[in-house]
Every structure is written in C-alpha cells, then in structure tokens.
Length: 260
Image (cartoon, rainbow, N blue to C red; front, side, top):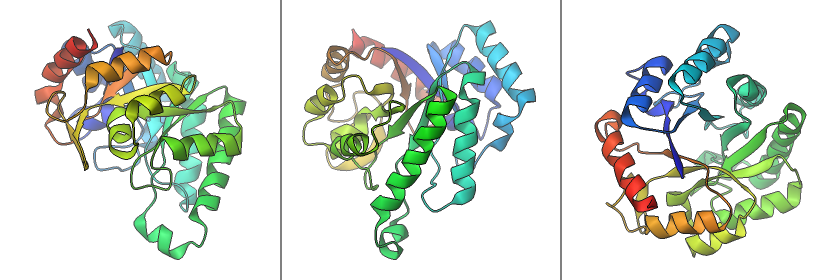
C-alpha cells in the first residue's frame, strides 16, 4: 500500500504547505487534501486558483502526490454545502488527482424530520455522480456508522441503484470492521470499486480511531485482502484521538511493517 497524511488533522496548527512538509519528513507517500478543517468547517480558500497552483507545485517539489481531495461535510439538506461539494469535485483535476472523497453522514435529526431520508440522499448522490462524470473525476464515498449509508451493503445497494461509473468507495478499514459482518468478505465484494482508503485500528463495538496495533483488527490480513481485491493504492492515516504529528511517524512505521 501507499500511505498518505490528511491535511485536516493538522489544519488548526499548520498551513497546507507546512502540513505537506511534515508529511514528507514523516515518510508518507502522499497527501489527502481536505476541504474542511479539524473542527469540520469548510475551507473555501482551497478552491482559489491562486492557492491551487502553488499547492500543486509544492506537491511536485516534494515528490508527494495529492492522493485525493475531499469534503466530509454534510449535504443532504444543506444546499450551500451541496454546491460546495460540486465545486470541490470540479477542482480535483486541477490538484492533479481524479479522486474526490465525500461523506455518507447525516444528522440524527434528519431521520426524524424526513419521512424518506434515503430517497433524498440517493437523489443528491446521483446528482454528484453526474457532476463527477462531466468532470472526469472518480467519487469515493465513505460509508460510516450510523449514517444512512453505514456499511458495505448499503454502499453496494446504492451503486446498483445509481449505476454511475463515477461512483466508488473510500474504504475506511475501521468503519468496515465496525459495521460489516465480515470485513474480508466486504473487501472481496468491493473489487473494482475501491478508489482510495483510510486506515486506523479499532476495537470491536467502539467507533474510536486507534493507533495500529491498539485495537482488535488484523491489519496484515486486511492489507492482503485489499491486494487480492485488486487495490494497492493510497490509504490515509485517519487518527482523530491523538496529537497527529506526535504519533504519525510511529503509526506509519507500524503500518509498513504490517503491510510487509
């Protein structure tokens, strides 16, 4: 696998350029550029052409490819955020990537006030797929409990319903471990659909992103299963529960050892 760092994790302390320098020094293979900060606030400044050019240039100077861009903010009933995600999709190729990661999350209140939340969600994802198809971009949805698309089966059902060549998955291994009956069967069922990934460890029954080796996951077997399914691309280290820069190098070393 190739491992990338996520700019969101450092956004309260580092500029994008400083974060990229850190990721290079820590030994990462790439960088996932996030259009939201650590407090899940939108970063519209990252759409500015005066910013895109220098970031892409710095990426080239460091030899640190942008593995994906993305926006994990909620959009099923937020028209402003929905349009922001469309703009983000259209900006992806200018950053030198054709992968845009987006969320499957919804607010808990939306299940109460909307009689058919799934119908609304499918309609919105279908529209994002059309934008991505026009832009030549691959969408990578991230299923996550307890959202309307919480697990691999939810995602595969969505794919069958929408039938868009643009729709793929950002495979968060911890989410699949938590939400799916069998993570390895899930990986096999996603052959040809995995565009990008997130990696962390998790304990059974607890949605808490942990350092590799601190949870119940068999990460070496997970990596083998991903390769058997034809995926050997970028997985971003996804740790919210630590000071990212304090643990990134150790986590990366552990992942490389487990990847063997």
